[in-house]
Image 1 (cartoon, one colour):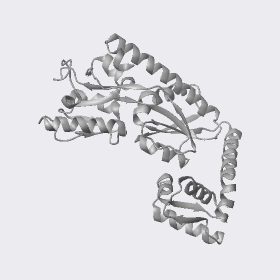
Image 2 (spheres, helix red, strand yellow; image 1 turned 60 degrees about the horizontal axis):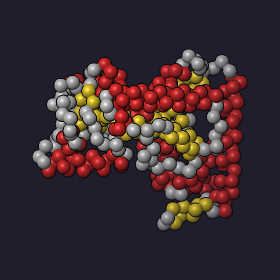
Image 3 (tube, rainbow, N blue to C red; image 1 turned 45 degrees about the horizontal axis):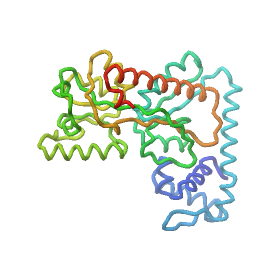
Image 4 (cartoon, one colour; image 1 turned 60 degrees about the vertical axis):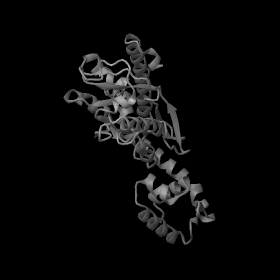
Length: 323
């Protein structure tokens, strides 16, 4: 007997073209996935995929199963949504997987504004490493994904909606030795303890690595890079008052602390220090009412964040850097 998990397994292997990549997306070990596939092929009395050096290709039997799998899974989702509507008064979940930068900049704002509009919707906000977002979404463990689109490897089965670019800023405590210096470069910044996320987009890593080498050549590099690894930029900004560390944040995240005077911004000269956020969701999946409402609120928060960032930049003579 074929089960739903069998259909999802076969469909993901076909989409990824590789057992290794399919195991990564499904968040299982490759040996376990290989055993599950072998057990299914035994029940189907024939191989579903041919193994090649370049990956896997479905057999005639595999193609016959794939022809039905996506339709069956789509129908099951419709049944689940219909049952939720019939239950009416019950609490419904909306799961969002997000990289912490996008979540803390605009995702939480949208969530807070949704509470009074949809009191019977429970938002499950799963924050963390932006690089994990596509995998979690493809495994159907969340409905929406928020992440930095730079460097993200996105499956063709995902729809993408870019949001507005968010300028970045290096922030320090008031009175920090770098705070009053008008002309500083990245090697100067990396001479101090640096707080950063565990995995940055490649576009950021390259600049950081080059500046790190320049600081090391000048004999000024801080020994550990980063000195503190933490995936929440809000927590990093709030911690700066305790020492001479430098943190990178986007303006929407740093603005409350900047306005309160608990941190100050260094005058950056690096346009690559920015966030390129976006929303991803499964292609062809109709958005339900609560999901569409969250998306609308997210777009509003995104536009508001851009407007506030531009106003702050103009007031501080930094319009060129924020452009």
